[in-house]
Image (tube, rainbow, N blue to C red; front, side, top):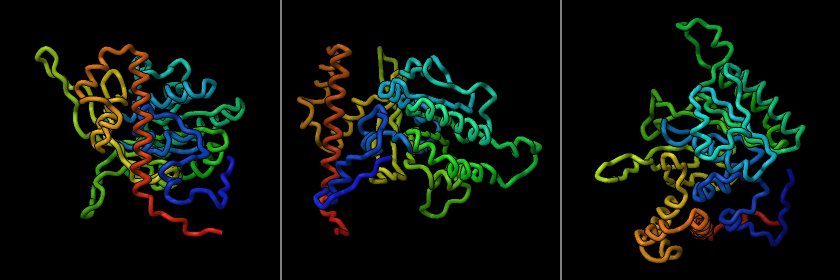
Length: 340
C-alpha cells in the first residue's frame, strides 16, 4: 500500500482530520451520515466489526455494502458466509444485493473457526489470482463453534477459550494478506449482556476476545432507538426503526463519532430521511432545504425516481460538507506537535 509523505506545507493541523484525504479505498455504506462516522465508508484492506442487538440492521448493512461494492468494483469478488442458517436470498435481492454475483458457502461447510480460517485462505487466494478487490462477510461470528467444542459432550463444561485463541491466530496469519489483496473483511457480532457489571461500566459485550478489538480498524456498535410508525386509513403499523451507530474504535478517522439513521422495512436505509433528521438536529436544515420539511416532503412525492435519487445525492453531499465544517470547528485549535 502506498504511503503518504507529508511536506512542510501539509495541513497537519486539525483540518486533516476534519477533511481527510485518505489513501484507502472505501465502499459506500448507503448512508452519507454513516460514511462520515466511519471516515469514508467501509475500507478495503481492513477488518471491520459490526456489533449490535437483534433487529438493529447488522445484516442489512452487509447487504447494502455488497450492493455498493458491486457498483464500485464490477469485477470484484464477494463472499457471504452465513453461519446462522437464516439468510433469505429473495429478501436480500429485493434490497439490492446482487445475489447471483455473490459466493455463498455450501450448507454444512462453514460451522467452525477452523472452517472460517481455511475458507478465508481460499478466498484471499481467489482475489490474488484475479487481481481484483474482495468483500468477505461473516454473519455472524457468534454462530461459529470450534472443532474442540464439537467433540465435547453436550453437558461437558469448558472455559470457552478456544474461539478467542483461534481468532487471534487467524488474524495474525492473514491480516497482511487481507491488506495486500484489497479485501474488506466484515465480521458481524451479536451483543451479550455482561454477567458482572461495574458501576458505570458497559452493560454489553460480544464474543471473540480481545484479538478482534485489536485487529479491527473499525468497531461499529448499533442500537435501536425507537420504532417508526405510520397510520394509513386509520390503521397503524410499524414501518421501520431508527438506529444509533457509534464508532467505538477507529484506526481511520476520529473515534467516538455517532449518528442516527432510519431503516425502512422493505426499502433498507432511508438515507434522505436520515440526512434531513441530522440537518434539523444541527440547525442547518434551512441552509440546504427551501421551505419547511412538510412542504419539502410533499414536493418529493411529485418527483420521478431519477429526480428523487438525484435529490437524495445532493442532500447527502451537503450533509458531508456540513459534517466536515462542524468537525473543523472542534479541531481548529489543534496544532502540529512536532515539525522538522
